[in-house]
Length: 147
Image (cartoon, rainbow, N blue to C red; front, side, top):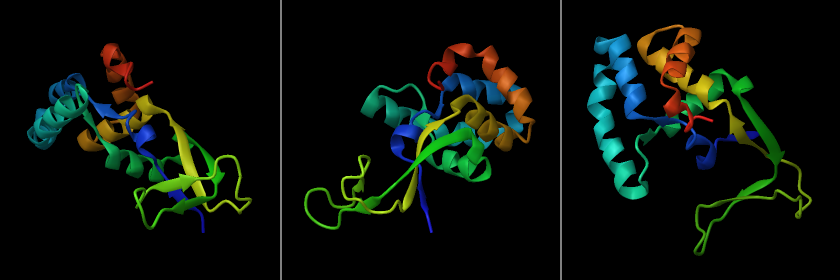
């Protein structure tokens, strides 16, 4: 059984920005209302901690990847989890095959961030993904974060 990992460096490519949130409001105010209520907390957190104007939305990307694995590229490597000491809980990827062990994990390396965001927004608003991608193109300045 191959474990599939979606590391934080990949999920950080999926940022719900204020412009995307406003776009959602314009497309469907009723369906975007809940997201509009919960995101200010995350906007504030990411700004205070990292000066990121938006919210990194890790969990929705995992769902999108599960439904659309073709959006991602991955490598298969041996991974172990540290169980003691200062690195407790950290995943160690044997990227150079130093330990000569068979791969036990598929680790995402890249994601089609624009398409993934279109699936997330489309799912929330029950809209066609291609239509949402076109709308995302209309706010192209936000797409710099999605590339």
